[in-house]
Length: 218
Image (cartoon, rainbow, N blue to C red; front, side, top):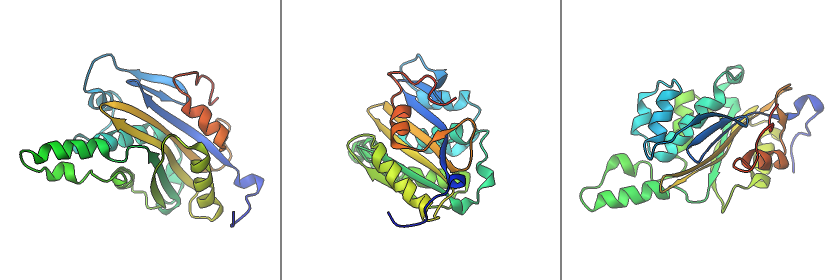
């Protein structure tokens, strides 16, 4: 891979992670929210976690998941120490915008909904995150069969090595038929006492929530 060879002081660290799965939310491997009702998980969890962004309620499911996970990922972080142009977003899933596509198709039977149509592209969520947090760095959305730690590690590392970014919101964001699966992580070019090295193995460990994610991050 071409580009700058990172010295020890340039070491990349995963400084925070967020998992949303099985109507539960985990931050750095610790559960912070559980939902025991049958519906409205996203709106209720959003309201319980002290967010204040009215546009949230107009978003599709991917947008809501991305906004909720990013809020928790950046909360109490040092993201403001990075220039907006130095913070990237690299996300992926397997079903693209299928959930929104289905809802839009259903609306066509009566009257097409412009509010749904705008979300029939998966990368809309990266735009929503960028707007909300005023981020202007590189961004991408990839489609893969499953969470691909090797690819995410390769692509994000490439951005860092070519000095495109100094921080990155990365991971997996999927939802179909109200089955949510989110694994987001914040990677930064900085020393971190509480973080872990940015490696494909550690990404897989973080994504293993549901098996055993205790002590993934100190």
